[in-house]
Image 1: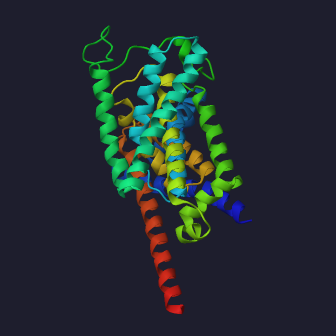
Image 2: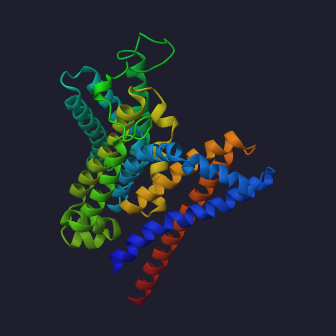
Image 3: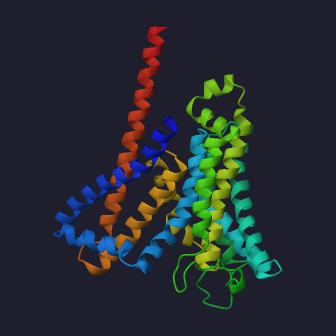
Length: 355
């Protein structure tokens, strides 16, 4: 019964948050003199208005789902992995270089490139975990700072040694990947590729892992009650390393999927400017780190982003209204986290007084 309630809460909570965000967006639309119903109708059309827009929304949601799942697993274990952006970048770069320089048939190179992206993201995340275990460096800080290292390293690699010198000299990017290595499209002429199936499968797999396996139970126990987990024999460092490597691997998979399924090359700044990683973190927080809820929240956030583009094209309402809605979502999540923190603190004081 508790598991069913947890699942329902993880699925309903993102919907509730989006409704609150839409209410705030309606106020912003009225302030700029727009028509709320017409504006939201155009936003809906931009996200789900026809099959083409619908598949574009799912395509945009794909890296957000994968990055969000990685963050969700780390959060479940009680570790703050804020380095999904850097892990995505290294995953995308590794996938691109593998696809360009590994010989073999297309299907084999594609699989190898995906695995290279997963390994690169996992190792980069594992490095942050090692810094915590070896030197006691705070994960929140190290993962944030490692984002900058990964960003500038990726930019250097495609600006100098691996730069595409056949096209525009102004573009910092790798050469185009051979078409035989691309992730297949799910529908002819649409942007949605096989990465979306991988993302959905990953959400189901992470849910199964965290709720149906002993290791997953230990991860959840460590995140919810570290003292009880230590008393029960759960080894913190082992669980941290495991959760961080899986978390980073999923983010690396998100980067590899974008390179192999959408961009077909590694382009400097493309993964960071789209804010996939931060949208993934938002989706995780909205769903309280529930894997299935994170996938749903990622689709909702992607719909807000693609819908806002359609809204700007067809109305006089600026694109920034979409940013207002996402900002309200951030405030909603922050208020919820703050309330939970104060509630736990009050319960601790109450228990201490009783003892």
